[in-house]
Length: 188
Image (cartoon, rainbow, N blue to C red; front, side):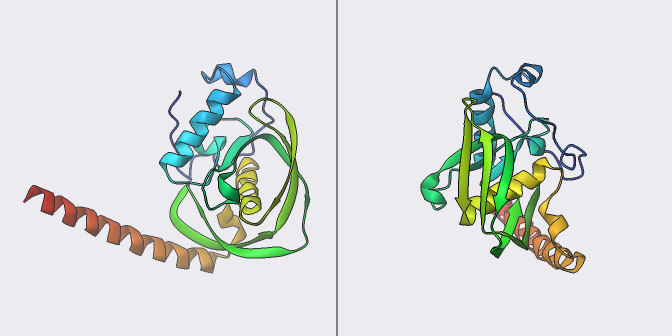
């Protein structure tokens, strides 16, 4: 299995819409099939404790993402979506806090439709339709935006982003202090 790595948020591949996926693209990037790509994506997502990950977040030009797999979300349902297209969304919206593996420790309140319906092909190449609600709907919408070259920071005001960045910076300072204290204790 190929090991994937997250790329930084300023990398243009994260901010660029992805062309439709075709199976012949896999060989160019050393994947034998969709199943291997799907497994590599879930492994990377889980390594960083995520609940969703798109190919462009790891520098791959595939219109594909993985989502779910956490026991508290839809009973642990895990999905891989190739070339997804949202065909409808609810008028009802929900405001929820979102984070992103591309922007570690940054959390923003984002409003999105509560429900969506989309079509996609799975890791076996079969055409599927999914009607999603709640958290899985939110995750899929977040990842879908990534594949369009958009990210969740575009859905928040500069004021909210600045406040969230300050919270993130405080958290990172606390983590660094903890790691330094732990390193000192281990030396003693």
